[in-house]
Image (cartoon, rainbow, N blue to C red):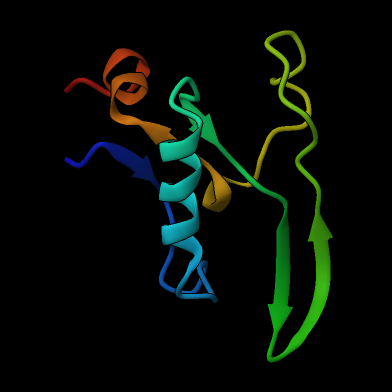
Amino acid sequence: MGRLWGYSNSDDLADSSVLAQVCGVFKTHLWADMVYADLAYVKWTKIVYHYVGGYFSKKGFYGRVSAHSTLFVRRKVYTRFGDHK
């Protein structure tokens, strides 16, 4: 397992630079344990729906959360709260 964890399907990352951007955010924001973004659903070349995850807050995160394919967390978070089978 690497230092970052994310769950994406084969067609979730339409732009090949997305992972480099995610790594760049973690490198410049060392205190961040997770990052996420808004999500654009694209059919062919047209955006058909735009999902806005909203701002993170410990109290409000269980309301409107990020789309799973835009969420990336540090391994320490997954190790602490993830599945330990």
